[in-house]
Length: 396
Image (tube, rainbow, N blue to C red; front, side):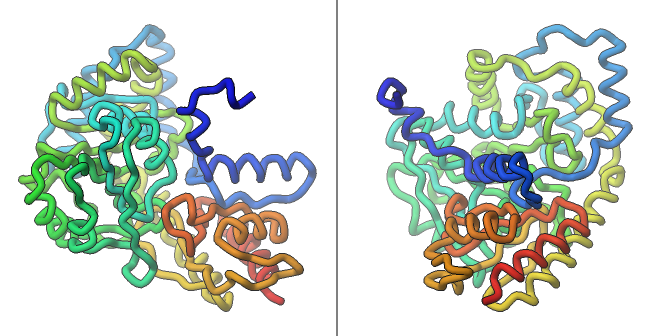
């Protein structure tokens, strides 16, 4: 019956991360012990001080529709957060609160991209970027990098990718899936290129901002020449262990924020009232309140890298942020493991699921066909167990 559906939905890919998670769940339901390292979801509980704020909001009878772009006091808290953490001066009318950072990104792309416009995706990139561009009838143009460049692009690569149809560049640091972090110097070099092309906008996805192990986080909008051309996206899901609360937000030029509010008003209206009140508590707290989670992720990063280095054929870099490793596993392409020939990263990920019972995600979905993404947002015990299984599955 797919011929009854719109071309829009038929041409839209299924999210690779969600598809792998669904396959893993299916195997679990059949009694197979699957270790899930495919989803980008912290395994911590939401901090108690945030939960208490939500309970207080319920007791205070917050239950009505919220303003489409978010409560005014929440938007003020977001402005304060941008100033405190990023050195960015936004006003409340430049802020739009959405149902997760994914909606924030979708709003921005929908209000900027016309059919046929080119959107540059700095690869590796989060799986949904290209699908969101497809929905806006834009063209996704990948700028690829690899493990040798620490999964970062050069200014020359950026300039060589720009065409007359380029309207938007989507960047993400700390990066999902690679964990790479662009330094201030590296972003300034990319901005030098973009200064020559004043009609190009930049969407800077900074959702992993606080999960950072060394290189200081730098917001692209902090570059003076880029401020009026940048949409800064952030949210609560990753750093505050609030994936299910579904709160994301943007800071952007007023005219873009107004357009995103108009778009959102016809799709979902305002985000959840209780989650918004809890978000105020999260953003107004000192960042040190969530340091224990970042410290634990750093220990897990060390552990998973040490274990993966023991496996012949797995190439690694040292991710400086987020909670993923993105090994190059191309040395296994063309080989037969346990009677199964591995031709690409997608087959490799399926092999690990079926043979090692560990769920990962193919790098194909992120614009990096030689890699797989492994999340270490899991306990150390689970990480050890998972990598032991992977090692056995890759041994002849």
